[in-house]
Image (cartoon, rainbow, N blue to C red; front, side, top):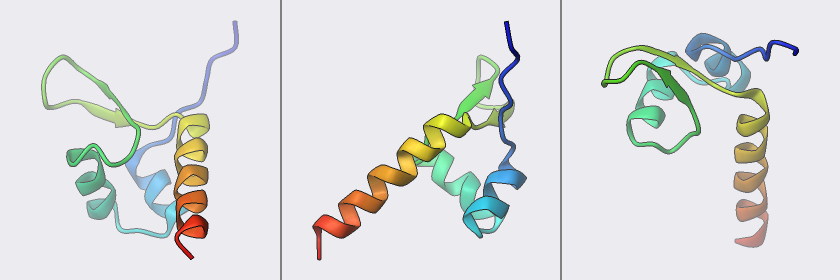
Length: 67
């Protein structure tokens, strides 16, 4: 079984050209798909690259459809 690589807040911020604080705000609003490695509200936040790509594609299509 291959181990899947997940992205950190900092990696996603760099990828999206956003500040890490903006990525934190997106997770707080549940506006971006993420995983939290804990049972509560604190814990490591990670991002599945495939889910992030699908999310980005959905945003792209929505923007194109609004033109």
